[in-house]
Length: 195
Length: 356
Image (cartoon, rainbow over all chains, first blue to last red):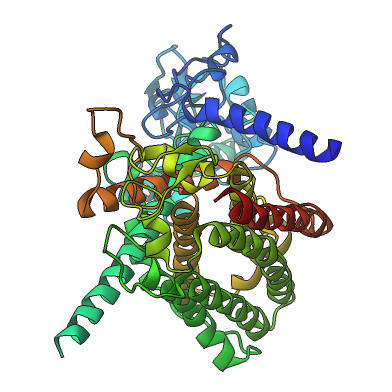
């Protein structure tokens, strides 16, 4: 009998709690960053759902999300590819025949990037590449929402060179190297002939 | 010939009603559960997500009907039909207003209980036919539960019938308001034959009928496999119980039967205890509220409101109480509800002999 009364009183208590929630405030959740002092207090009244595409939680300024490369500033030093723990950066460089130009911080660019691919499916968002970059051209953005239909679309290609341009530059480099080799040979022969 | 056409129209109308009720019942259930848990529920399809279940059923209609290779094909195919038809047949005798019932049977209440027990057969067929451990477990639990809870529900109903002296649902309805042909009393002492309203309802006709109502309501939750008595389809233990293997339209029928059952048992509770299509407003002297609000249209309105309110309570209970364990379920039925229902029946008999 005492079990029965306990059962009914506890059931009644539970029902009154859910009843209160049923008619509690149904206003949309107010979006506060997690660092806000009222963040948890905010969850006590109203609904808790964040309606994601319509509402977004503010992300921290120093958050680590998707990578972005500013190619004009890149000197193709390959440091980012070397430090990457999961080898998700793939760079192919071509030596230029002369200095191409300068980056925004004044470093001279001497290499073309024929290929600068970052595989975002592999990336573990550690941010090491952004630390080693001497010209700070590789940065982490605040973009975290990306859906693709093909896995290969997750490999971001940052190189702005067409294959034709790359082939042309390679040819120029070969010609220059051939000229230099010829010049070197001629100089050697001259030296030998002199002796 | 014409009355056959009428029969078909009534039957199609009832089917349409139960389908629409199931659609919006599911929507209401999702919204109620969401608000209770501080969520929002469906919001995207239509205004406030109101077309969500319509979209769901459209999707479900296009799904392939998969029959497991090891299933008993005939039983598996027939089960959803039998489950639904058993519930759907129950609607045939329910009164909607004064003189407004699809079929006014003298044995109405008995008929409802007879056809509802066929549902257990359908559930057993579904569980056995699926040839799946979870399904057969769910079906066995369901059969044990429904058969056990039919006993307290039956005795609760008998105590009302002893007071009302009829199995005809229209007669029982008419007794609970100003249209009663005999003298009705509030708790056995106050003559409310001309006052009507909430005071003339069966729950207040005798004090023990209030307890009987609670017993019936609990048993009806168990019979419609609703939480906290939803062990036949306990999601966390049995996947989905007897309807684990069903897809597409067959699953839709099982679901339709579940929601129609909710409406049906609530409507029986309203007819037997809460004044059926009678108004809750009493006559107070010159203000003839009960007389003004009695009639066919008012009747449909009142019975719909009361039934939907009771369905709402069922949902509210579902999202509050945790599930019973099998032994707790059986203990509660056999050691608490059945003896109490027996005592209530006894009191009903004495009440009838000495106080009416």
